[in-house]
Image (cartoon, rainbow, N blue to C red; front, side, top):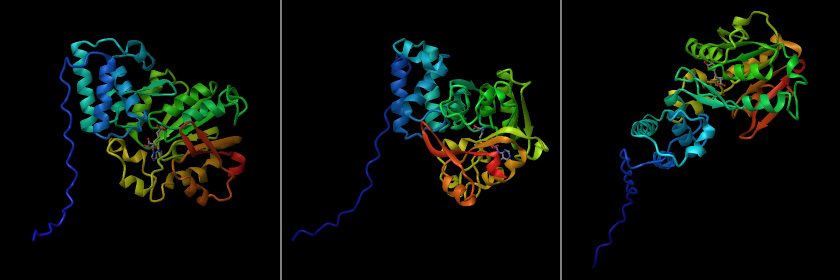
Length: 319
Ligand SMILES: C[S@@+](CC[C@H](N)C(=O)[O-])C[C@H]1O[C@@H](n2cnc3c(N)ncnc32)[C@H](O)[C@@H]1O
């Protein structure tokens, strides 16, 4: 009698990685785009740093490496690259896969609302929804304005400024305003200073090092914007490798994620003009914020890619 063999569950065989492309095998920009996407998919990368999918990350990499504006990719998609350019592209693609650094860090640039910003690992890669909300709810063209006349805004504060991207975007929206921008990180402020200088805004944006409102004395503002750290302890423990290249200080929101948000909400009234307001991003912490401030009438604002991650509250409701 044949002995019954016990079935042993075997791990699925590992798929062999495709061999890397050799210089000369890929010819056009489109070839490199397709190859990069295949490599990114195979390596199961995470995309959350100014691009949200492998195709746009690859297009960004190829365009930046070849000194093309993002909207020029299509025009040159069928154009061939030189040998030197091919070597550069292959190197960048492998760096993206091997190091898991977002492309923004590899090329030291990211676009936000169509504007380029210098970035390196001293700052989080800008991706705040507040940029879009400044256009949709605060600019002269907005259909649902939260401030009637952007030209009447005189003073704006950007708390937790990082690269300075939101202060710079706000300076464009509130074209008559002077702005203060604060960060605890000296390194982040050095990057912000580069961006402020690149946009020639040194006479309108003052950078301050310190803990939230501490460096501002009794100053009051028509508008406070903030994209503070808001990742809770569980989220911090499971950050993807890409985010581990970014400063921990930019994410860490304490056990429940709202340690910094809580302080901003509590102190904001003391720094707002009577008709002013606070625009604050909190990621997935909406419930925690509503539990912490049950009587505050928070207006949750959506964007194309977010729902209930940013709130607006008027100064008069904060007192
Ligand atoms: C999520 S990042 C936002 C950066 C930038 N505003 C953006 O949207 O890309 C948060 C920033 O807050 C800064 N930060 C953390 N704790 C702070 C504190 N207590 N006071 C001031 N800035 C702080 C970090 O250094 C980091 O640059």
